[in-house]
Length: 193
Image (cartoon, rainbow, N blue to C red):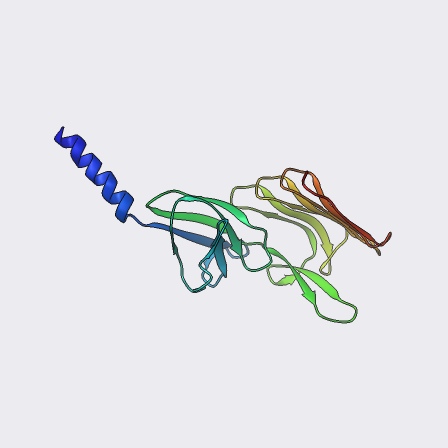
């Protein structure tokens, strides 16, 4: 009986006074070292957490549950499950292939791999081992179809380069989200249903 009461008291104190925190650990795939200066934040259905202090390594959360992790400002969110009353940590591999868009007339963009113009066949992976990006480049430009994937392994985007290019994006369930065709000069958006 005494043991049951002690266990009950322990569980109640952990529930009432325990702290739920989240700390992502970012790995630079170019040098396999931990990155410290990464802008990130979490969101739930009503609020963003961590935006008030970008220099923080971890953040306190009000409750356990599912959150979206945003890295930098242009990335797709990563679904994160936070468990109650403990320190939660994730290892996140940062992209080694980045798109730079220049404000110019006409607009121009280049892909960079580890800070250098992308050249040759390039593959990029998530920390879970799933493919993130696959393509062939010459002087920073894709010369063959560029494949981008969600963290769950499903296709998120196809970029078909040519003089007039075509871009197809997908929802996480595999359905087409949009088609942009510069040759035929149209863009079609689709609803998830």
